[in-house]
Length: 114
Length: 111
Image 1 (cartoon, each protein chain N blue to C red):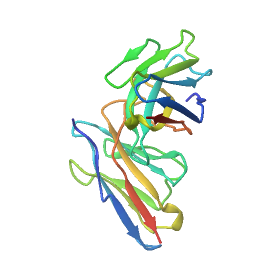
Image 2: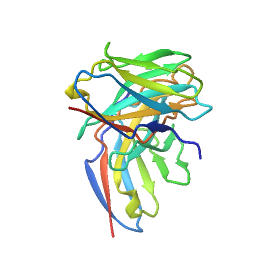
Image 3: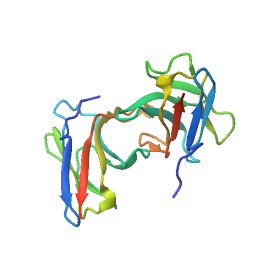
Image 4: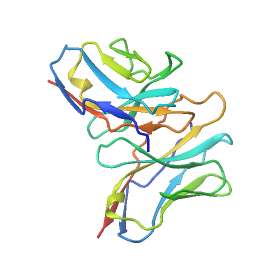
C-alpha cells in the first residue's frame, strides 16, 4: 500500500470548515483513499473513502486531485466533538482484497477550538 | 445503527496469565480483525480472519496469540501467557467487504 503524509497537527475554529490534507504521491490506480478518525483512544471510526471522484456523505467530503497524488478531507462545520486524530490510509481494494490490513500512520491531530 | 461490541472494556491481569478478549462483530459481516494500540503509539494490525481461518497476520501475531470464532456471533483473541509489553488497547473490527468498522476496544493492563 502507498505511503501517506499528513501534517501532525491542525487547529480549526468551531463552526468553520476543517480541511485536512493528505499526500499520497505513490498511489497506484487500484488504490483507494480511506479516512478514519480516532477520538481519544476510542476505536477508529470510518469516515469516508474514494477512488478518484469526489465523495460526500453525512460526515464529510473527500476531494481527490485529478492526478490522485493528494486529497483533502473536509468537515464542513467543525464542532468540538470533531477533535480527534484523523488518519488518511491508502489501500488496495477490489476482488480478493477484502480482509487485508489497514496500515495506520501518525495521522493529523485536529483540535477544534471554541 | 449496527456496531461492533467488545468485552470487557478493561482487563487487568498478571504477567504469565492467559486472557481472552471478546468481540461481537456486525451481524452480516464476514471478515474479522484484531488491532492493537500501545499507549502513545500507532494502531497496529494483528490478524484478519475469514471463513474460519486466518487470512493474514502480522509479525506481532506470534504463537502466544490465537483467534477463534467459537459460535455464530463471537470472535475472540486469546493471549496465552501475557507479557508486560502486551499492555495496550485491543480493537476488534469487522467488514462485509473492504470498509472496516471498529469496536470501542479493550484496555489490557499486564502487571
